[in-house]
Image (cartoon, rainbow, N blue to C red):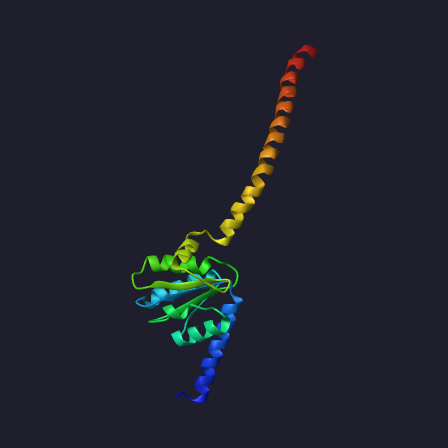
Length: 179
């Protein structure tokens, strides 16, 4: 039986992790087995730069935190080594980075994930991983909104150029007659 101090520490970890899960919009649970310290450091750096919180946690603590957060169905994959990555702003950042890393490492694997407190399948995680970043998606949407306006502006400019071009041709013809 663990001491009272250890039990309180574990309860604190579970509470903090449950709050983190509830406050996030997306998360991924992975098996990090078989990666080197250098690979783990690079992975953590990439995740941190994308705004993803990545933590290695015991399976029992993840299970209890998920239950406390109302996330059902996670405990089925909690075996072996586990780490959880959560993101508060970007739905695809954790899935994209972790799936890309898993594709390059045989022993590193994505176990499960969730979106808006709903567990999703591995197929959906892989689909999310293929989506471009939030910034790229916003740029594409903005480009789609700007395209009609830009086309209109080019058409107006073409009319102005055509009218100015017609006067420019007429002006030189008149100039020699005056001299």
